[in-house]
Structure formats: structure tokens, C-alpha cells
Image 1 (cartoon, one colour):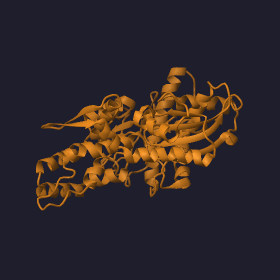
Image 2: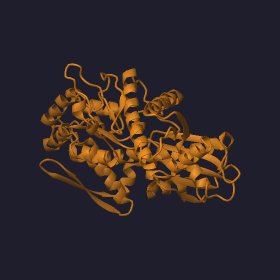
Image 3: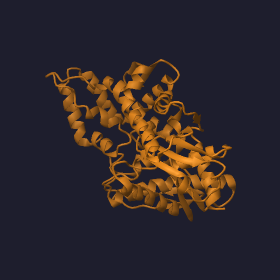
Image 4: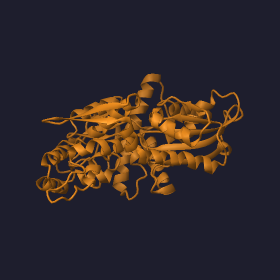
Length: 420
């Protein structure tokens, strides 16, 4: 089970104005209701506000609902982006546990409906490092959240496997000789690399410790590529790099925070009531107030994710075309800008370099040159990233996995070994 599907709930289930303001949230629990799992989200005791089953959606339907009405819906694109974060209070950890539990319960109920069997065993895929700043303590915190959530969702036997190792197990199933393989898993929230000895001589072993030569991982992935592209190419439309009438450049954080959708603190700061006053002052002081008026619309209509979504569309289009015209629809106008493939590559240089550094780290730690590079994950299809990986390790064959299915298939294979 790889936990990455988005989730959303209606805002009326929570009296707090900001999506990520969870410090005051009370404890809640998951209960089964008519073959579904309704999540009783925190409620205001004076108002008696709570969530009913119809208020929670998953997957594509969650995204569609959020994009149609971002002001009245909370959207969690990837809970892994928040697990393991440092400085979390107990009530925040409980809140993330509840969200993960809701997603696991949804997956479990769908699987049981499909198989017509009760499912009590699961293998959970996890990144090498959930959150780079917290080190191993962050990893332990995140794994503990996942374990408690899985138990509450009804799983009795739970084990974990690194996602790049799981992806490698799927590739191993087709090997005829033993090889040293560098598995590069570029997901939505994390990039993970594993240098693994694999092949017929290792297949089916319950203990793969001796064949795992090195791991590297960091919280940098597809989301970061989209955010950086949005920041560099789209946020100038909202006043970034413009100046006040006095000649002072507008503060960059006001343009970074609304699109930093994987940073809870950045989102909390931008959408706070105090920041509204600052944005209004910036508009009054601006040499181009019409641009800051657009930024105010981002605030009022909660458009941060929508802007990142437009950047993601541009990134995908520019993988096959040298030029793309991005369009952002506001209430009273449509903003358009041309983006070239070269501009995109320049915009995403920072997260791309971090990903390539992880590739180098795994090879150096393992002390062995891989016989093949197995690339998987949603961003593994990016020509920019593939070229960068090939440039770092020239002459080594590159094998493409199933962009979205290799990890899950590998986890299933590991489950057969663990629970046979």
C-alpha cells in the first residue's frame, strides 16, 4: 500500500479559517458506517460542527471538488509531505494520523469490496527519509503515525518496505542474471534512491539486508518541480519582481508562500488574517497595483494550488514541445504567458540538482558502479531529469519502470514473501 492519493473534506467540518491551522484541533476517531469510513473530524464544542460521510472524498474526485471550490474545501495532496515534520505538537500528530487513517480505511474498504475478502495484512511503502531536517527521529515519528493509522483502519499485521526497494523487486522479477541496480524513485513528494544487488540469486529472500548496498532520500519531488516553475514563470504575473512606488522591490516571500503547497507553515502564514492587512498595504504602495490586486485574489479565492496546477500542466506539455502558453483564469481576467522548454529547465534547476545529488550519494555510499539504472515514479518520465541522471552516470543502461505502478507491484511481491 503506497499512501499518496489525495483527500479533501468540506471546510464546514472545521471552524478554523486556515487549511493548515491544526494547533487547536481536538482528537477524533474513525468509525465504520454502511461499508464506508466516516471521519469525525474535530468539532467546535459550542457549535457542534462535525463531518458526515458525504463530506470526505478521495483521489480524482477530491481534486475536482477542490478546484471547483477551493475556499470551502480542505485538500491534502500528499500526507507524506507532512509526516515527520519537526516541531509538531501532539494534537497535530493526531490530526495527521486521522487523515492517513481515513485514506487507509478507504483503500482497505475498496480492496475488500473488489476481492470479497477481509484484508488484515498490509505492506506499507515508505520513503527513505520522510523529512530531511528531522533525520532518523523524523522517520520514526512518521512510521509510528502510519503504523497507528493502519491498526486503527483494521489491519492486524503491518510491515514496511522502502519504496525504491519495492520498485526494484518488481524489476528483479524479469532479471535472468544477478546485477547491481540503482533504483531511482522520483515521486510526488520525495526522491529516493537505492543501490541493490538483485536477480535470480536473491529473488524470494525474506531478508534483503545483505543485498541493500546504499540508500539516499530527501523530501524533494514532483511537487517541488511544479512549485519552482510556478514561482519563476507564473508569479511575476501577480507582482513578483515588481516594485513599490518608492522603488523598493516587493517581498519575495509573499509570492513563494501561496504556492508552497507542501509547506504547512508557509500556507498558514500567507492565508493568515494578519497577512491580508500586509497584502492590502503592498497594493496601496505598489507602482503596478493591478498586479497586487491579483495577488489579493489569490488570497481571497485560495488559488495557490490552482497556480501550481497550471505549472504542472506546463511542465508536462514542455516535455514534448519547445513552447507552451500557460493560462490562469481569474474572476475578471485571464492571464497568459509563454514558457519555453529552456525556461522551464532553468526554473527547476534547484530541485533537479537536489535529485541528482541523491543519485550520486547512493552510488558513492554503495561503493559500486551499477549495471543498470531503474527509473520509476511519476516524474521519472521527465526528459530533463532522465538526461541529468544519464549525464551523471554515462554509459550505464537506463530502464524505465511503470511510472505509477512499480512501487505498488513490488510491495505486493514483498507481501507474498512476508505473509506466505
